[in-house]
Amino acid sequence: MQIVNSYVPHSTNSYTIVSMVVVVKERAELVAVEQNGSKFRDSSAKSEIGFPRFGEDVSKLGFGCGGLSGILNVPLSHEAGVEVLKQAFHKGITFFDTADIYGDRGHNEIMIGKALKMLPREQVQLASKFGIAIPDRNLSRVQVNGSPEYVRQCIEASLARLDVDYIDLYYQHRIDTSVPIEETMGELKKLVEEGKIRYIGLSEASVDTIKRAHAVHPITAVQMEYSLWSREIEEDVIPLCRELGIGIVAYSPLGHGFFGGKGITESLPSESVLEMHPRFVGENLEKNKVLYERFATLALKHSCTPPQLALAWLLHQGDDVVPIPGTTKIKNLEDNISSLAVKLRAEDLKEIGDAIPVDQVGGERDYEIFSKYSYRLANTPQKM
Image (tube, rainbow, N blue to C red; front, top):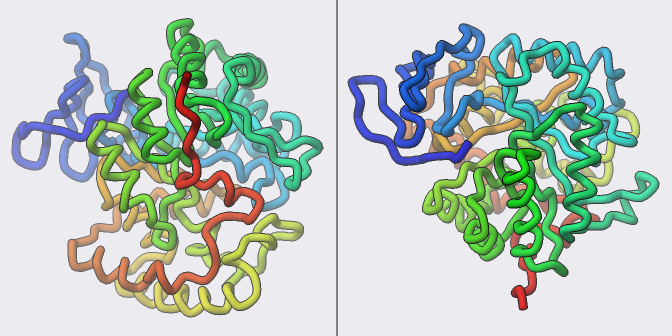
């Protein structure tokens, strides 16, 4: 699943990717995948989603599963969540993202495990994460642990909850700044060798940490917050990832629902953790409402909704950028998929970016409790 950015010309409106030799035609229609001389056809649903420049089948849009278990809203039942996941798959989304802390007592991983029983496992790219513990679901007691022993404990627990033999992409959710990254990566490398995971990822990792981790074992993807109102990684992380051939998985691509009108055109869900988010409270929210209204007008110009335009902007940032929007509603799922049909020119991208000046966004991008785990602070001690 190593992500490859380089490509060589194949023919007009198509190109051959260096790695697995993946042939993709205009409008992101997957025609065939060749590996070691074998070919296989993709489903029509998958073709509708598109194909990023991964070395393996990964849908152009992923699905962030945390919301199904109540990260930002009331959790769905397992039955309702499974139905959303099945619909996502049948509409072409095959890249599902979860974590061991999503939901109470592994609620989200258990839900996904149930969904996988109804889907062809080999056609799903499953990503999960370890490294954060929240005792008693009390956010004031957040702990980050990257010790080898904890890595081992977490993978065994996740495999059991998901009821699978392996996880395709396994991320360190937040970086433990007390443990040399080489020690964490050493254990993750063992998990690859044992077949428990296929690829390794990092989330909210600093440039130095990414470099050092990649030297131990190739990093396949780095998951970072990336959206129109959170673009810091364009300065340092994205250039490094492209230099090393690492993919960028964009979490919160709709700004925690901001670009869908959350807190503006619709009230925040009852008891939502967003009530503590700096960008959704007080003067910051009032300031951000002005940006939203400007952006909504721009969406009308492109004959789409604000969330579709926000996703389309991200999708145009490069074939190595995979947004993972989540939702609990099938209608929103369908609308998100429709963002793939929004075509933007260079001048459109500039106009859209200028409509949300990052220096005019009110509030810090993360909750105060998580700010100390921000990627720019995520450096680890040197291994002795």
